[in-house]
Image (cartoon, rainbow, N blue to C red; front, side):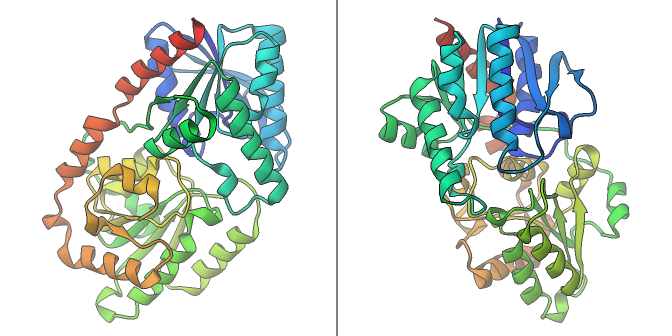
Length: 372
């Protein structure tokens, strides 16, 4: 089976939930005999064509403007597939790229569409862009040969809005052995269990500003003067929110911005965190939270539906946007200390429900259904 993939920037080691999803999923599909070509975006890739663990990654041009990047790249990807590559099917990720599902069908392509979240609720989009994203959701959901939802909430949404029954195939995480080294921490001047960690793109819905505010309140108590806040992630484009976070990080003491990190560095940052926090107002199914759980570090998350679906303990959630609640939850975790944290409980949840090999097998079933 020959499969083309679009709707992402590319991989390996490119920031983003869909990019991380694809980096883990497609090599496993290659192992199952699928010929995979991923269309990446030229501003993020160093070569026009490269290979990663058997996956062909082909770069196509696009402008690096948030309002045009996805639209132009997906349009070119679908045209390339329809006129040149002629795959057995094209796998389109996310509601924005889903707008081009009807075009793919007109060109004679079979389509699998994965809904990763209600992107039209993201704060950066105006009314017109939000409407366009909702149209993309409709096009992908109603016109694809098979639809995949990454969470129960998204599955329910598709069923109720479009009377389509999607496959439920979540994001996953690679369950690795817990790191024993902490050498990577030296790069940032931090020590094990003496920092709070947040990982994610610097966009308003990730709410890093809430965490900085809670951290600032926490630091008013002198017993926490040694604690630092580590913000891992970058912005794809210049924005007012990026400037806001950079300004806050300059005002509040002990805030460290590392930029985008991956591999060994990110693994150690997760492993030795005093607590990982996810204060987001919007998620699909949060890979960063799953990664933190798999690393064995204590975790806290906002009480939005996608985070609740992961199934943490009640004490590991806080009210979205409630700075005092977040501050108190962080303090409770730090007071308890890492030695009293049951790291294996969350690792077992990840191993049972979010294994990439099971996800790859289920995705192949969706491909086979779409090809019938």
